[in-house]
Length: 258
Image 1 (cartoon, rainbow, N blue to C red):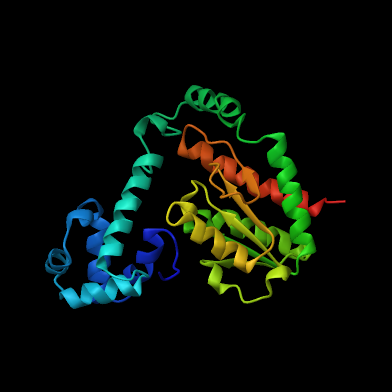
Image 2 (cartoon, rainbow, N blue to C red):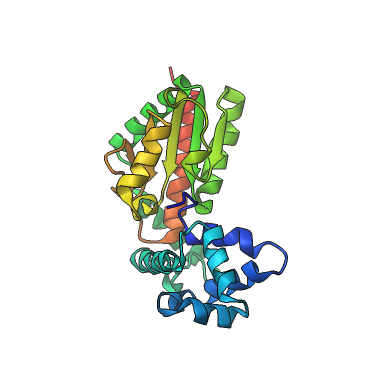
């Protein structure tokens, strides 16, 4: 199996942002009709996308799958992940709603301590310190994560560059070419998706590239690797705050390590 970005959306994005061609047509149809794909044949997808079946075959290989069957199975997995982790934003979780009164805003901010109270533990903070010590000790530091984690990774990298940390952001482990013993590899995986498909193989890909791998996640799915565990919150906006706090804690810990 080819090694590619582990979110379907990351795989589709390069095809969606290019000039209009058969790959863009297929990617757009898949994105808009994702729930139909598990029961859609290669011929049906070709017809709906106004391309040939051979174009669909080339498309699925281009985005990292061996064949159409593997692609279709992966889409079904992706739909399952969406159901489990509820990527939607229900209206009742909206932070601020009209008429945006001061009383409403005050009431909202009073909920924050309870929302965030269990997101960090003493063990979490100690593991962040261990991570920072490792990043200081290793010549090469790599950050691996989905686009949704990009802002967190970039914030840490940008803030710590003046302090001598050069973190390279990668989309897949095979991008690492430096010797294994010189590398620290940090996987940012909010919901643990990285290990949902072929977990032993995914773990092996990581440890083959680095003898110091850390997983940062809101789930316990780290396949036995050192885990910086963040608590899961009840809303998406609270989770976003947690990851911002995580980034800041890494920055402060790295800066002020004895």
